[in-house]
Image 1 (cartoon, rainbow, N blue to C red):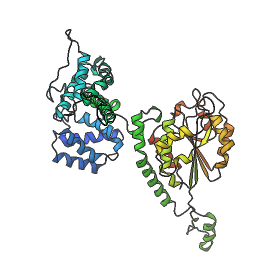
Image 2 (cartoon, one colour):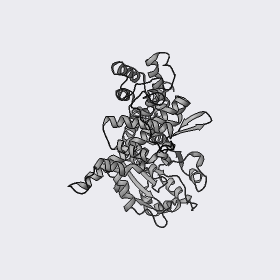
Image 3 (tube, rainbow, N blue to C red):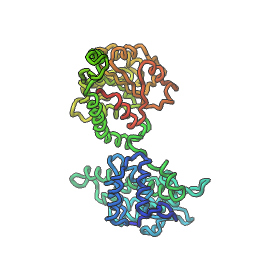
Image 4 (cartoon, rainbow, N blue to C red):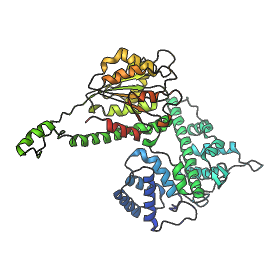
Length: 482
């Protein structure tokens, strides 16, 4: 493993206070990315650095992660920042590991077919030497295939390097290396061994992609400066990712953050309830008691608090455009179901159906969502969102589910595909419910554009922008009952 270079780019000195100052700079970069790190965690990190080998990057990385991180979903951003502040090498890695030359054609060009063969052989080998060689080869790939000239000088692109190598084409070759020359089905469990090898090969291809991205960030930081790469090259925190732009991996990370988020919201609710335990001031009884003190209200009389857990009715759009947002919000509502006396869930695409029974206590939410989409009657004609027809069918078939004790929560982007929005049905629903709120995953600036009826619906029901889990948590915290 190569030596740690705390400076972050070639020729840069340590911070004025040496390694302690460099650690403080790293902590400040974590805070800029939204990762909460306090003074006590920083002190603990300094103690860790004083007792471990700073040349062992893996030990340093894990030691700092254990002391500075509170949520596992923040780990990708932490790793990216760690690689910028504690890079594995400077320049082309010539002194940081084995020197590997890219295979070339007689014309001097990089032989991509031979390169893929070498990569497949290295990725099929799980020995430490093979890993070191793969990292050195990755550095050469980024340096030669990922380099391009920009107005500010040479730059590096992970996309360009990966496009040239095409790592997805290596799957079959890596499988052959993992399985050997034996026929895949000539022994018991052959199909199982093949599936294990296939998943292993896919994981190692993903690891190679990650190595290319890390190396690209390192070389870009040397050319452009660490601060600039921090702004565009570090992945967002899970709670900051836009629901409508999230990848499958980001949605998976979001789902893992549901339980910690629910615990945080529940603790905030407990604080609000403690503050509201005394009840509000009873003005009539306070004035009556003030008669004994000459009309001066010295002793305040509070009303008896009447804590109540309202019913919650959730009406959510589960069409493809907002399915990820609705899924995450339903996970959060399910985690907070104990804060309500009753929760009823209705889903719609172009018509509405009750799906409460799919989200019973103890149900696995991912499976529940899949079952709901298969079994619920959500489509009557073409399967595109039709908010007007969905609201009308809710009023016609399920209006009894709304009472004066109900809080109505609508989830969706309000895009009607230029169909009748049927504001009248929404007005009936809002008039009956005690509270009504609409959570919209689209940016506020896009409301009313194209086929969006968000502004029209916003005149009837309070609409909140909920583009990310962070915004959603803030909105839900304000809407929770006391």
